[in-house]
Length: 99
Image 1 (cartoon, one colour):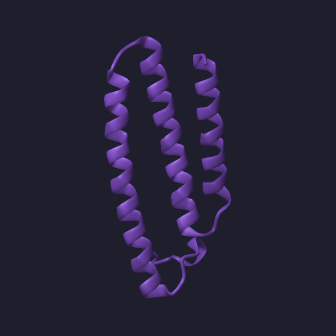
Image 2 (cartoon, helix red, strand yellow):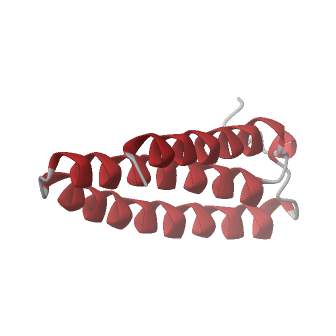
């Protein structure tokens, strides 16, 4: 498979993630959409690293995977906390920062 196939796959995954973020009202669905967008970035990094023969893209991919795991853990912890306080995970009903 050539570089174009990987870039097309990454673009499709990014668009699916963006669609999920824009259309979902559930905060867990929004987090999943963000995860899809970050995974598409990882696909791009690995594809370009393989295409150029450099290991730097693989190292950046491992770094972004670590960041993604931390983001998912913090995001799910916030969702659980908001569910305990507000009894809902719908993003439209979360207005805790409004004064």
